[in-house]
Length: 422
Image (tube, rainbow, N blue to C red; front, side, top):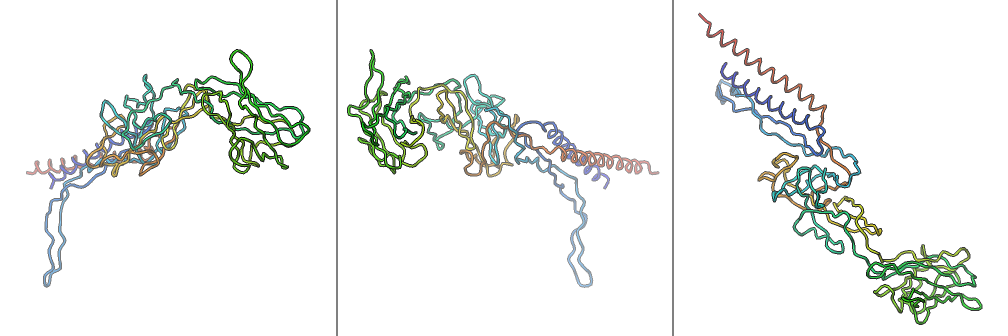
């Protein structure tokens, strides 16, 4: 009996020491971004049966079995993958996961998974973890399309990279031409040619002689060597209705309710160019009412080209770049991995995990799909360690450790008494 008590106490000391190790590691990582709390879980060891269970017989009731346990063992070190608090950092390379999922990382060809989103851009512009792992996702194809069904690859962001110019093909007009004006009304803007060079375009609305609501429109662009070139060989006519809204545009397609599209005869941008008039009565429509002159271009689809100035990560993991010409374009998308049993992942240090037979295979896809959560750019997930709970468990583990050592010393005294018997 005394030998069993020593063995049980020894297993208790070892289990309590393991629990202290786990608690100490949790407390040490209370400020480690992306760290996940672990917990030592216990189970009792095989019991030694002293007496078996007895079945009832006539005149004698059944008897219960008697057994003495052999101690305790650590059954597993469980990881709590619950979400930690998310703090805003404003750093574009910081990304936090809201909900389930893991970032996919490749380090020298070895794939691992992590919740820590404190990334950085390396010398080549590759989005990387603190220990040099390459964050995986899908790069945007020319034009910004992203194929999330394709195999993942390392994500890179080329700060200072350029985007090609877009020649102006469509210009939307809007604003007011003062009713009753007897003088031409002009507005000038810059279109862009195929090389991104600005092309000044002047539009002139000329009122009808003797009054009326049918205005003649002509556009001009500078001509090499001096002078100007007309956009239309025959100037179109813009007619306004009694309500001051555009009712007809000669040479155009469309209607007052759908808007008019007026192509030019001579394009200065290298691609077919047209002007659009918004539907009558809508915000920004071209009007002829009393008031000041505000007629101008409202939007155009041309751009001079530009360089990447900044970028951000959206909830779906989409990386959007903003260029110096004001355009925004998709650069890539961060991938997330989900597992049927995250508790089966194997910790490999550096806040990284690898899949195992227990976790199942990674299910990789965009954020917000399947079982994975969404992303928050410019933010970090903090450790999910509950410091108050860890300190409470620390007291419990210390008490268990001391109690088990007391069993050892008491058993030793009993054995000494036995040895010293006369």
